[in-house]
Image (cartoon, rainbow, N blue to C red; front, side, top):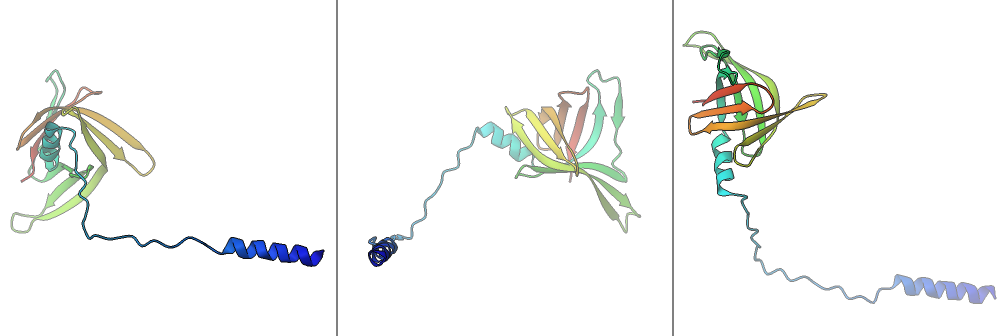
Length: 164
């Protein structure tokens, strides 16, 4: 009885290990498939491409325009750099030395991801070591040389010029 049981078990083991499938070779015709890129809208692409530059903060004011801070561009700059991949960084650019020997120091304030919604809403997600912060802005003016954004939650309007 044991002999019959062992032979039947061995037979099942051999049958289960053998494969009756024939391998099929895939044909490679050498052609590449193009995946079309669908843009949400031409306007948003235009806003994104215009915004993807380095911008220097020149003026900060409130919406009533009764409080205003002018930023000097002599020795220090506050620069916001927007990249086309959705990454941004805000940093201080400090110039030291004379005109003949300019030394520049970069100090990063924050960085994170940015995106544009409805062609005039800018959302910046700041990433810090242990926290994050989201700022939402309304783009009031955006052309080749100037950017004016209004914070949607605070009473602040920031004016930027494109860094040369």
